Image 1 (cartoon, rainbow, N blue to C red):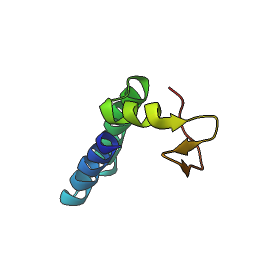
Image 2 (image 1 turned 90 degrees about the horizontal axis):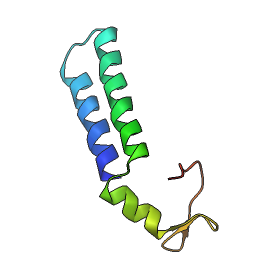
Image 3 (image 1 turned 180 degrees about the vertical axis):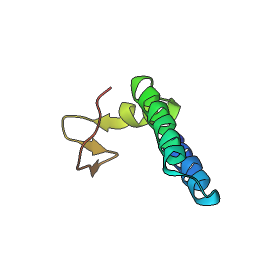
Image 4 (image 1 turned 90 degrees about the vertical axis):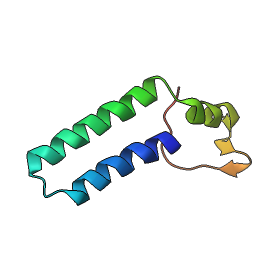
Length: 73
């Protein structure tokens, strides 16, 4: 999850720091989407550790039941 938060934080800081036009914000969001998509195709170490410890049958991670949508790898 650290990788996702780093990418989202970086884009948020850029948007807040500069007086961007809408098309500039869209470019940053598109770049963020591409980074997140790449991470979904090839998970980083943190994500792989999560999915190694996640029980898809019970939807539990370390004994905690998770709700909502979770991508499968």
